[in-house]
Length: 402
Image 1 (tube, helix red, strand yellow):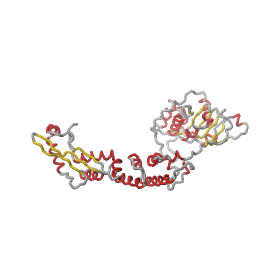
Image 2 (image 1 turned 135 degrees about the horizontal axis):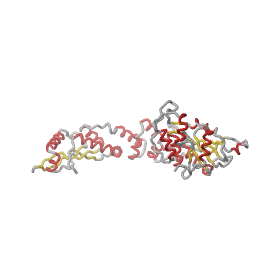
Image 3 (image 1 turned 30 degrees about the vertical axis):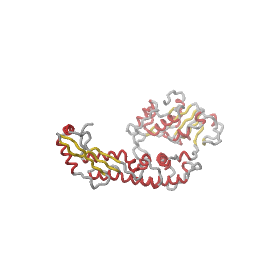
Image 4 (image 1 turned 45 degrees about the vertical axis):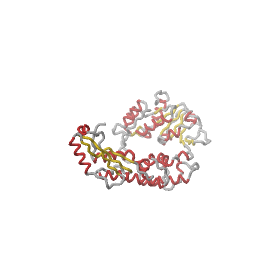
């Protein structure tokens, strides 16, 4: 260990570093009435005259003077430890270390030494720990850290939700959106699922009954349409309803107009995907899995490519081919593109790496995220007849996502 001398503010910084690393465990111990011990060495590696020469005699003298002006006799649970050191044949006592019992004592020492406690946020962390303890939440380091990451208002809602959960051990009669929890928004459980799991050991969403998947679809097969049968349909998980025919081709789109007005294609059905939810919506549908080809057509924007990438990750090993989502489509339709959303806000540039795009798709993704004037080309602005042509061409195209 290289010899060095810690001045009062450096010792405060070292103590702050200890608190920053272990604040959750230390506060929990404090709540339990314990006083865990922390220590800070004031002259690590300085044990004899040779070490004093290494740090410099002037520095040694200045250091001793600095600690002479920092007494701790009036602070409970703080021990200022000195130890003898021999130098040029003379043995004298000099500061050695600080031994501190408990978080409150550490805060007092840091303040005495001129350190800044505000960066630690101990007051709020201590308050959150007391709130959790009062709500009978088992105090663990992981639970306390998770609770401290939400706002005070959200924590109040969280504790209310935990109390409701404790009174409702069986959630099987509800869907996720039906949970009648006071003060809790219907979508709150989804965004706070991880926090609730950490604080309660339960996963409420896994305990609820599943929400049935409903897929809206349009029949495209011209031979079937000639019979006068219904053009548009819906399929619900678990229902006894059968489709008019088993599709050889399933095209997933995002926009309703694109689905409703898609031109006839032999053996095909077009469905609305619902964004990233499309993967979970489609992966267990028998007629989707049995289709010979599954294709995706979305907006030429960051979200469209992210949805395509997600579909491929979730529907493996079934290949998903895209249409009108390569760089050529971007170039062909960029005159229809925009750089702002429906509220007039500039569409942000995406930085996510999408590893399941083909090279041509990746080039399109790069184009809409280049920071230029075209950041989104909505699929409904592209004529459906041109989309049909692209679909028919893709049915003979061997390029699929990895």
